[in-house]
Image (tube, rainbow, N blue to C red):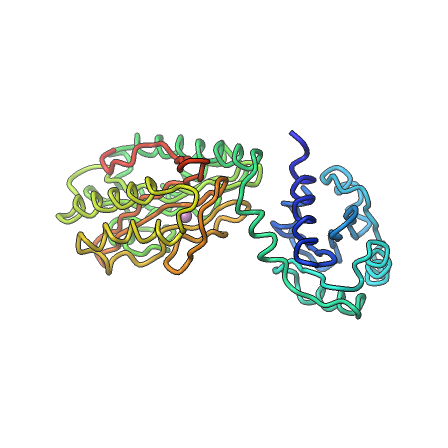
Length: 368
Ligand code: CO
């Protein structure tokens, strides 16, 4: 396979030409990694990636990054400056060389204002817009390398969920935080970092969709919402199951769980190219409304996932974007009954040429 980073940059350049932009500028961010292969946190020093619509990209960076960049990115032209040097002068020079100091320049949307202002100073004849839509379209359609990472990350999450299920009655008496820590350790044996803080919402805590974990002890009969994932090669998994480790759940629970499972199936089964994203949301919502739980499904049905855990396409009412092969998103309907319990079932789904395929395969049954 050709270097995926180089290939993505080439595709971005085609789009830049298509929209009549002279180039795009990135700073340390998921977009920067997506194109260059270089991963770093934002910082106060100027580290900027310049992608002209036509020609080879270049990077302006502090001296101390020279070796790291040479190792991690396919981009050959790396121009460095010493601490105490004048990065803006260097930026002006490189911009002129690449032919991007005039015309429309598209910026990384999360770029810090200080760097944006310096670009304005360096290129007074340019106009500035965000690269967002141009790049979001590219990032939505995952390439082979990305799909492979997300499959591995999802297999890892499945394995951990299987191990959690096997705890059975042993989970009763553990605090949510204890169980979350246990899950975290299992995830980190299989990947580099957790996708987000592990969610263990027991009993009434499960009714708060954004509850992470607390000191509550898991009791017999508690429905427990478990939502977690792990990153492999930078790509996260994200899955949810609601289980009862031991004992009899509250009266309405079994019905609610059946309804969520039905809604999730209906939504997943409808995934195919050409279907508007909002239709997937509608199908899940209809099932839950028909069962009389409409008011208890308080969030959108899903979110795209890639380098960022939440990214387009959003599976939400009002988004008429048509699904395309290579898109990956969550399908995660839920029912939240305040002061009682919550139910959520979440799988990642990839859009294939003729349908959709789940990336998670572990049992969705609430009985462990
Ligand atoms: Co999710």
